[in-house]
Image (cartoon, rainbow, N blue to C red):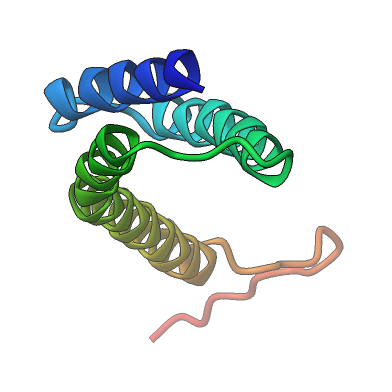
Length: 112
């Protein structure tokens, strides 16, 4: 169990150190790997392995970092929403200039 908590702590510390420049893909990989470790910890705890007070403290310190990680995820989500919104606005503006004219139509000018 100590090894799992140590690995979880190291992963969390690594992602926190580069949190300002981390990409969505890196965060996604981190969350997937973290979930695997948490599942393994749950299995150990269900098999009657007792958490020591030092392990509980270490886990609490790890979970304190969750707020920072969640905030970064929210920033990335907002950036993606803004990008999609700008893209959709560009499509609307572009489609206004790309009117669908029929190829068989004829344009007639009048002389004044």
